[in-house]
Length: 198
Image (tube, rainbow, N blue to C red):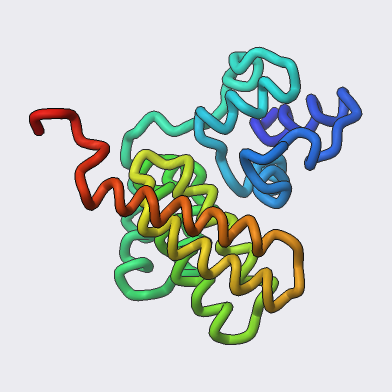
């Protein structure tokens, strides 16, 4: 049984909806991708899901393909697609190769390519696609080792614009997230998060 199937089975066994499980730490759409094995959760996300499902994290870890920080060969194609500006192709390659897509670099490429693809979709008037791409990119940016406050700010702008054009709820939360990202950028710029004496 795959990791996604285990999560879905545990959720259904408890009679919980996806929204009840995710709370406010990931989107329902991202949980759907995880349950369908088209996205691999970070260890932190898996721990949160396990807590929501009232199961030990180790229940899901048996035979699950989580990132071990290594760099599988499948990343080469995804890197090449990213360098060529083929954002959607990069995302497809990462989704197709769970070993590559679930590494720290895979998370970074997901976030970067997803951001660019979301901007393209927004510019083309494909607001629903822009929303989905931006939400996924936000997840990968937040959960990855190489999380970037600058990328987070850009994503909140893109997602907020998509939500506003769709007349969907949530754009106000994106505004608040943007302000928080700007504060984090300001703190990083002024060295407030550096250890004293650095």
